[in-house]
Amino acid sequence: MDDPELRAYLDRIGAERPAVLDAGALAALHRAHQLTVPFENLSIHLAQPISLDEGHLLAKIVTGRRGGFCYELNGAFALLLEALGAQVTRVAARVYGGGKLGPLFDHLALVVRLPGGSGPWLADVGFGSNSTYPLRYDSREDQDDPGGRFALAGTADGDVELFKDGEPQYRIEQRERRLDDFVPTCWWQQTSPDSHFTLSTICSRLTEDGRISLSGRTLIRTSGGTRTEQELGTDRDVLAAYRDHFGIVLDRVPTVAHPEKR
Image 1 (cartoon, rainbow, N blue to C red):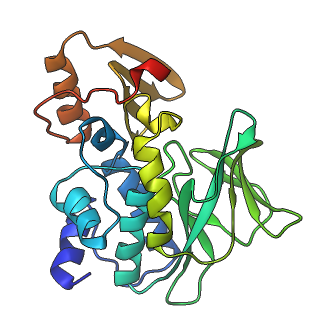
Image 2 (tube, helix red, strand yellow):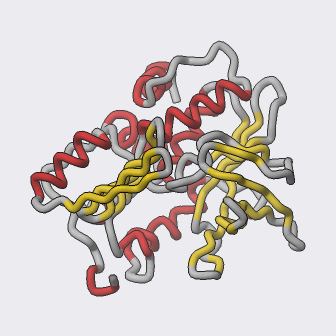
């Protein structure tokens, strides 16, 4: 990432370039990213192929002012942190769902070490409703965060499991991976009727006091622990919600790829 791209990325998330990338600066960038760049799978339902090429990630998220899912969001965030001097290890994780683990490469997370030696930190801006701030990756104590109470625990085979409020979220394989390693599973997530990403649309981001999401035609707001839902009746209402709440300008409403599996 060159300097103009770095400046554009920071502008995209409304952040200043930190004088020193320390733990406080990492936390601020992590939060700013989630406040401005939504977790969304709209490309799948707009027949827009998802590319993990670094240039394509920046073009979509920074220039195109879109969001994405884990491979895109954490893939791009890793580039930002590296441009600021961090050492970033890309790790694969298996996500819990329905009481069982998904496949390897189901999720991309980041293990970050900062220029001054701070870390390792678990950074993840691509898991929907997750921790607002990075978590201490080497700690096995509870870690309180605005998003909940998180904990990391080692497994018998050397992996690391992430828990939120006592519930397992995903299991991290600790070996370093390249972004290219996630391409086959990224393709599967985009195309398979067995992938939950093809069954419905989601667009969601952190807010100052909660979260806002558009799931299908349902606008969901969580504020101060209170959840409200609003059904959007027309395509015009849906497109306006994408624009006004997520900064995403579309010319048509995404069409669910595999409605028969819902």
